[in-house]
Length: 256
Image (cartoon, rainbow, N blue to C red):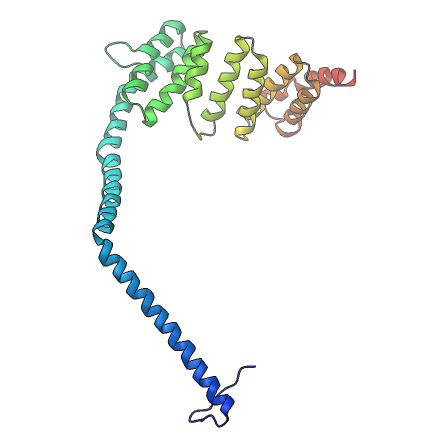
């Protein structure tokens, strides 16, 4: 048990005197150890200060270089990419909304009127957000042009956390695999697209597509699960309109 020594108190017994000596020795040892550690650290720094300064210099150069790259190279490059991408985006949007779709999708890919196409953006501005987005446009354009292998390649290169574009890219890859008669691959991408985000647009759409492909592959129980999710969780979606028919088909197959 700890004891409290009053001010001016002097130890009287031999044990108390010995105890105080030991405490003083322990305290002295602690301070000596700290002094020794500090001395060793100072000696190490003094001996190796040249190397330490070199390391600090390298780190500083790296940090300043990264900041300079972002400010003076990456940002201007992205601005140029966005400007050069404008006409290709216009061709793509016109193809989606208008006629002469094939020719417009081709112009979106390869460019026209002396302007870059999506393929040029990908090559010239590699590493920029615009080049990444151009992969989505290019892959989708190839899908519309029925060039399914290129569609898979470019859509697979697109990376995004966007609520809509991220699942659409995965789902478009699934569409391409359906056309390539690779149903199992298509099902995997539809399932991934359905689970990537939870919204009223892409989630029920890809749950439905996954259910249809699952039925085609003889996986009726899995298909039933997807159709029932649409009915229960996305009752206001377009896919929910006729989902009862597909639930019935799946139930019949499950019961066999």
